[in-house]
Image 1 (cartoon, rainbow, N blue to C red):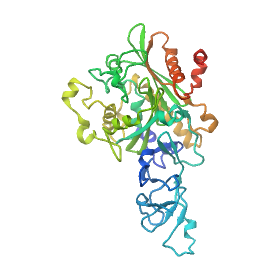
Image 2 (image 1 turned 45 degrees about the vertical axis):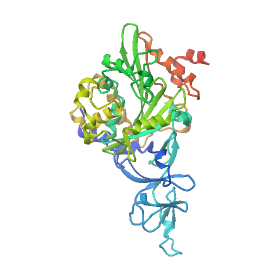
Image 3 (image 1 turned 180 degrees about the horizontal axis):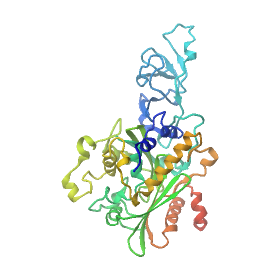
Image 4 (image 1 turned 30 degrees about the vertical axis):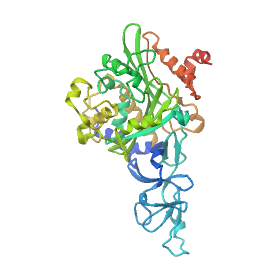
Length: 453
């Protein structure tokens, strides 16, 4: 358990909050590129407890500026795109993507007012189907060479969804290997050949065993947690017998992301981005190592659950997440349908808008959460003291953060320590794009690299 003060420290992300200062030192997903398609590429954005407007000007440049017009506070999200910027519909003041005031047309022609007006503006870059914004001070950090950023556009797909709860409890589900055996338990196994685009529905690597069966029948994983350059590596081991062990390798990507295997073909890199203290979006990039992503199929699958324009789940607290007691008795552990995103959403939203950690009791299966919270407090202190926190990178160092390795497979009970590296290297060497082998793996098993070249 922790004190209320400690809980506030690691959950609240406003401009004056310590965790808010930390978060503002990183690029944050602000929208999907898809959201600014169409005739009117203007979108209101709430991010880290502040209100902005995101837009694309007539030349294709993206801008993120404060939402309230500096004239008399009118809403710029209802502005007009014209004459090289975003024009307020109240009095016609015009702003560039850099926040420069270009025109104040209601003022006298010789008025110097325009030259003295500057709207707060923030850098925006497009990367892997997302628009990223930097809300911090000084130069933005460099992006690490994660697979989702290195892979060509055809091999990635981006999507998002809204959770009505604090970002931290949403993130912590992703670094909790034990919950999948319960929250995502299916009582019957599906045809694994129809698992494209669905998590936990395919077969494990080097086997024909469906993941649903492994999670259902082996519910006491041994969990190992290691510190890395980018955060934490989690290895969950489920021993099937004396010869075979199921190995699942996932990663916590500091400060609020994780990288997990979706199938033998894809990984998911996901961030839980604070809208404010009581809402967050998950932003995910799906990366394929075999063939181009079927983006239309992936999008259609997800739009069966998520409604535009806000990407809210059709199954939510207002309709009890579609809970069906008969289904709970006969088909799924939760009785909330087959989409694991719904399961996760129920779990984290049921904790309340901000989980009260003064009342929780953690066990050994929570070791990754314990270590992450310790790391988070450490890096908050560093940021508040003026230092550079973990994964706040300059360009040379960013090139050294590659991967990270993920996998989901059945290997030898004795020798699993190198088995997962072998699977990861084989997948990378077989990819049609230049998927880099992380240096830490190359250093530990150089014979794998030599054999693959």
